[in-house]
Amino acid sequence: MDRSVGAWLVGVGLLLAVIGVLALSGALSWFGRLPGDIRISSDNTRVYIPITSMLLVSLVLNVMLWVVLGIFRR
Image 1 (cartoon, rainbow, N blue to C red):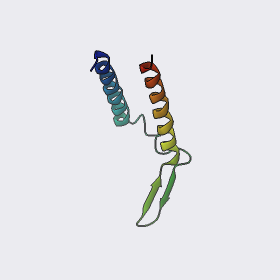
Image 2: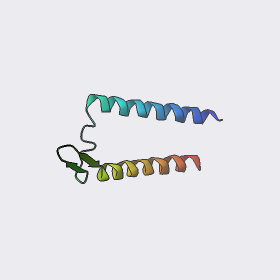
Image 3: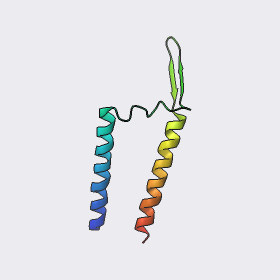
C-alpha cells in the first residue's frame, strides 16, 4: 500500500466523525423528513419509505466516488 491510501483513510475517518457529531447534535434532524419521503401510520403499524432521502444519499455518494476516481486516475 502507498502512503496516500493511509491519508485517504484518515480523511474518510474524519469525515465520518464530523457526520456523527452533526447527527448527535441534531443538525441533521431534517434528514429523513424531506418532501417525498413516505410515512404511513395506523394504530399498530408504521411504514416509512425514504425515497427522497435515499436519492440524496445516492447523489452525494456518486459525486464523491466520481471525485475520488478522478483524483486516482491522474
